[in-house]
Amino acid sequence: MSARKNNRGKIEIMADILNLSTVGIKKTHIMYRANLSYEQIIYYLGELQGKGLLEQRMKDGTTVYGTTERGREFLGHFSNMSELMSEYSETEMPLLAQ
Image (cartoon, rainbow, N blue to C red):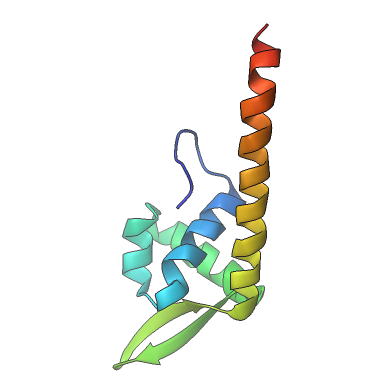
């Protein structure tokens, strides 16, 4: 999951949900592990499904959510972007502090 030093933005929350959902997970478990309210989880699940990043399926008679191939691509791009930003922050922050 992303570092939670500051408030997470929409993209970070979506990435957290997709990371949690790579193995198939119940809505309630996503809600608690991602630290989201019920209203937030409903919103983000709808957004992610609408974009084809997350799918809903049945497993042992229970509804679970799983990250799609497109969602895995999103996570790869998000990871690359986060890595670049952390490298940028580490090299540029001392210059800004002067």
